[in-house]
Image (cartoon, rainbow, N blue to C red):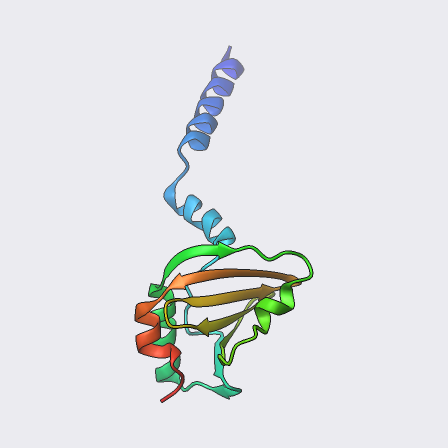
Length: 145
């Protein structure tokens, strides 16, 4: 009788936990799969035309990158990865190198007049998405001053 009661209590707790998990756990799980993450300045290097941005420009760029609005994901078909990494434009991308623990991620940020394309590269995977970045273009994407 005691074991039955204990199992019912434990099953109830597990059911409650599965139907409404704590928000911290939900945030952690979602952060593992988000396409446009929020970046912090430590462990990040940003280059433009092969030159490293200084700390003030890097912080301004990261702030505007984090505030940019996600518009849509661009689908990359197998074999077309090079077209996204090296598009046929004269745009020089900002390249963000991110290294945390054993994860290395590279972001190529291409600025256009009406949007910003970001190509995220990690391991052997590539993803591309578009940001509505009026704020990003005005503050940082034009290149180092």
